[in-house]
Length: 142
Ligand SMILES: [Zn+2]
Ligand SMILES: [Zn+2]
Image (cartoon, rainbow, N blue to C red; front, side, top):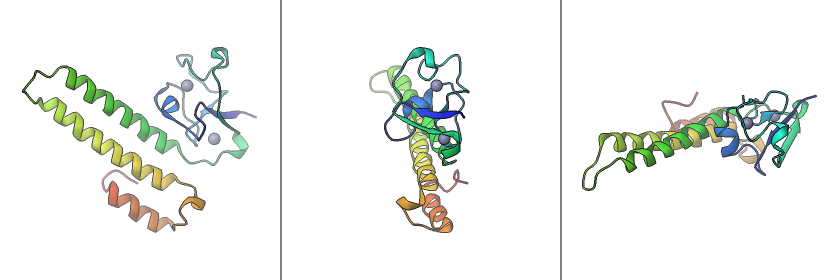
């Protein structure tokens, strides 16, 4: 039986979002399906694992949130990259675009978190949950 693991205490975190391993349906990493390129999840790196469950106990939702977190992280880095190339007293189009993308990424991540949250945390019916997510992210949430 394979095990789904993460390096944060409370479910998948930035490490899972940004590492090259394939994501399990919950957003964690399947210990039997890690990437050779990853320096966090393969056994040989001996990193502490703080979240785990067996594949049988997988909640089956959460991967969309982790994918959204990766977009937010990349958008944040793009702002920093664009800002570093900006001359004083001048706004580059690239920086403004990067800020817009960061906002869209954060809104999308928030909508995916609402859509993926366990029922016990919100008690919303599916159509209510979708309506809430659509208020934040009308284009992207599905
Ligand atoms: Zn990994
Ligand atoms: Zn899982």
